[in-house]
Length: 118
Length: 112
Image 1 (cartoon, rainbow over the protein chains, first blue to last red):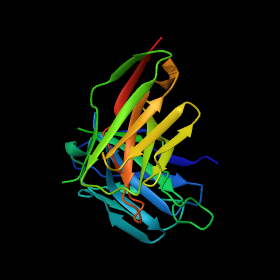
Image 2 (image 1 turned 45 degrees about the horizontal axis):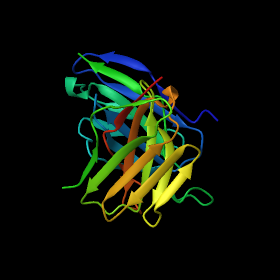
Image 3 (image 1 turned 180 degrees about the horizontal axis):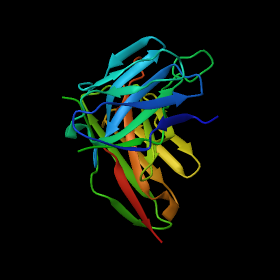
């Protein structure tokens, strides 16, 4: 199992550009999450999904969009990039609540995407 | 307002000693609490989970305590090694939503 994979690892955007951060998991997890982490700060939840076709906003959703068309993939879209979106982005997944899976929410994280908006 | 507090100052200890990290919270009623390790440039890795009705959980050199009266969890690493140097994050989940909230983390530096 590759676990949670993210692409790209690094990206520099100009203000106003758009991009999609890719996230894929091969553990058949139902829950998937997108976080951002700024220096010295904890993880802030951007969006999450409880299964294919279902997404919901987290703490800091403004400026982002997501979709969940399959169990495996959970891309994060940035429209009109702004310097405030400079951060490290982590995707995570969890098998919480699945039959035979964990009753609790241990999360598996990807390696992160370091994004700079200039 | 809800708040999770982890010491923002790095914890420096000597190899072989026990490291103790603290996670305090206010205005939460967590059903369980998790601890993660994060190395520079990498994503967090799950270490331990403790439920509200458990006082203590152990895994090899790691021990977690959970005091819902004090609203505090302590994370201990015994016989610490330089390889234990990392940032440790606590995360609280009030149960049912599977949407935990993370603290900022505490950096641990173990000196040889």
